[in-house]
Amino acid sequence: MNVHPNWIATPITRSFVRGALELEQTADGLLPHRLPAWARAQYADPQLAMVEAQPSGVRLVFRTEATAIELDALPTKRVYVGMPSRPDGVYDLRIDGDLAAQASLEGGKVLRIDMANGSTTIETGPAGTLRFHSLPPGAKTIEIWLPHNETTELIALRTNAPVHAIDDSGTKVWLHHGSSISHGSNAASPTGTWPVIAASRAGVSLVNLGFGGSALLDPFTARTMRDIPADLISLKLGINLVNTDLMRLRAFGPAVHGFLDTIREGHPTTPILVVSPILCPIHEDTPGPTAPDIAALAQDQLRFLATGNRAEIAAGKLTLAIIRTHLAGIVKQRAATDPNIYYLDGLALYGDADHAQLPLPDAVHPDAATHQLIGDRFTRLAFGPASLWADAINAKA
Image 1 (cartoon, rainbow, N blue to C red):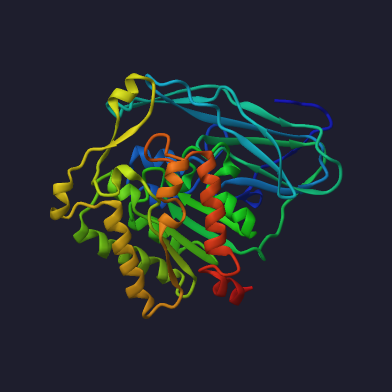
Image 2: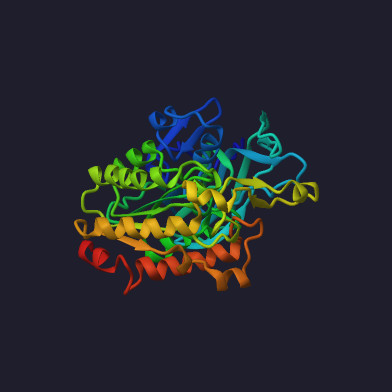
């Protein structure tokens, strides 16, 4: 730890953290969670445990005149057996809303994942220190966005001037739920995920419940969303239901209705936008489950395949095309008595023409450029002057 006499150590408390629902005190520091403990206890799934603790959309926010900031943190890196090492997670520093610096931490814990058999092991490692020096003088708003895809335990914050919590109670809160694409998939940095891009442009405060592989209409996720204060809510549903082959058409419709009913218990008039899947050619008309392409893994490439059979559609297996049709129908049905529910076709965010220009690198997840594209389009379609939410936003302004 740096003990320079000019440093001011400020305890990291809830008042400085945005985007996390809980801060767990661990042996090393504070671990942000995007699901509350009661929800995590209802299903001890290793995939869900990993992704909800990855701080997508989580950031430290404060006002200060400091020209030097240091943050001690303990990351958990993911390593896929037989694959090249993943790049270290990126921490984005924003000053008054503009990206000013980026940094990464070496070391940390290692979560070793074997895609071939699904096993995982964890290895211990040291914490590190992020250093942001030579910042411009004067009062400013600082945001430190944590890596969207790397679990991070917060240990200590030091600055060379006092820091002050910000009262942003007047800022609209956008609560979003989705899959790994909403989580951030292959975005280059935490402020490069499509939800953060859209939230930044719209001037709203994001709570991102995008969970890689885990947008599965879980009732505990709906109850969590029911209890979170929000001015705008969006649900991006579909891809995980196909690639896990979790349910059949008979269960899908009632599950969507039940998810929406639960959210409405806590948000009776809050605008809700239901977003269907973006284009994913391998699953447009072929059911899941999705599986790693073993031949590609042998070449140190991560790609995915659809392993379902189209003949199984007659028995109720889901495809993305089927899900889009039924989500549109569900929203239309509910809109007859709920004027604050809306539908957005995911193909308007990323469709066939986009895939020709920006194909999905692993056949499922968009890359950094595609996150920018989706974020730009969502901003226009959901937040813009003629958007689906325009009337609701203006009415609540």
